[in-house]
Length: 67
Length: 467
View 1 (spheres, rainbow over the protein chains, first blue to last red):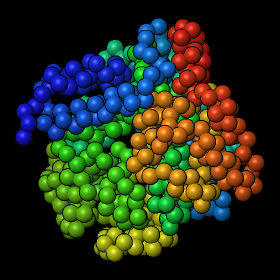
View 2: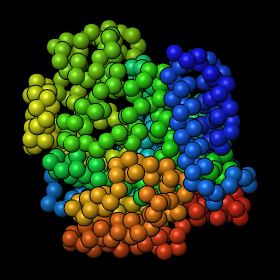
View 3: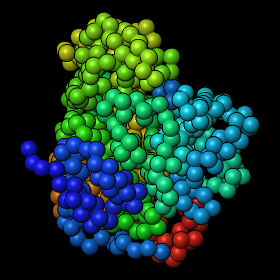
View 4: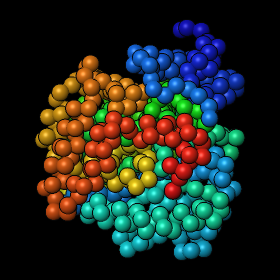
């Protein structure tokens, strides 16, 4: 069993340009500290997959930006 | 959404969710929505309260076609209109217009607006404040298949769902074929590219949220909302796939209260017992005897992007016979004539732009009504490729590719397949698909249009998406 690595998930969330409410929910849960290895691993896996899709799909039209 | 099971021509039901915003463009507060619910109660709507918090969470009114139900599901800032089934798309559209004519002024009177958009565009000051204090979600948390985190994952998102009447013998085939083309629907109808007043790198975030909905501390629940690992052979195969979780997702209801078994049981284990010790949410001890109406909970306890929605006729289903037919893989035969409702619920589309709400229902109705031609499209790519297309389409919209090829020819074929399906009905519904043809012709889906408007300023964007 691998050691939980909440910092890895925190970095992924902060780098992934996820919707604000969604990122805040994940970070809140990490902060509260009540989660399993399965949750950590699965969340990392899904976010990494989304990042892979974005990279493999090349330049997306909608670049992040605030108005 | 009753009475979709019996038909000569398929009936269609609309189940539309839309974000509710305040005057600043940010999510409406729970307090302001309570005022709206109260106003609706004063104008003839029958409100429903959560049995625990006593907050109003729904309202119903009969418009002559059956009861229209308004609800806030997991978030106060999301309004769902569930309309009873109608014979034609135009009838459904007329009913939708009548309901909107009551709901929109009620929102406006409290300084709120409904958005034709698939996600809250603004920011939540406090995510916890947006939650609905629902016993339904408490039950999910207590059953171990949800928690405060997962139950909040979809609170910003709004879908336009479509129900189309089907026969039980075609339920699985329709489900498989509509699942395959969901990436195409996302490419054509994606409408959630802005949240927190930022343009996301996704044209359709909304559909991606579902992947995270059932990632909980225990493995085995994820499949309830993710793209299935394989197509389904039969109805028995479908339920065996979704009931193979560590425990029941939705627990039995008695007198409107969720009752939790004392030990974790799968649906198969629960229905095999004659008595089960249990407790209600307040902790009071109860004894459950598995009953046929528990099937109505079990049969809807999964949330894939396409799901057959079956409701058993009271008194017609026997628990042992049901499981015998499940074991023998003859559920379609057993359930024939034993259902009071049978429809496919299509959940892959975001809330539509203003004035384009009938396009997606027309597409889905037409496709279900032309299943043989829809299967020809489905044969063109492997199941896994169809699954991956959802993500590519969420990122690229109409520029997405499958097996290296543009989705545009597939979408042209899809729309014409739906047009053929509608043309065999005597209601002249094909014109509702023109909106989709226009999106293809200009190579822009609703997300592209929303981002273009947003680049010209927040107010410009809100003018475009606000009802």
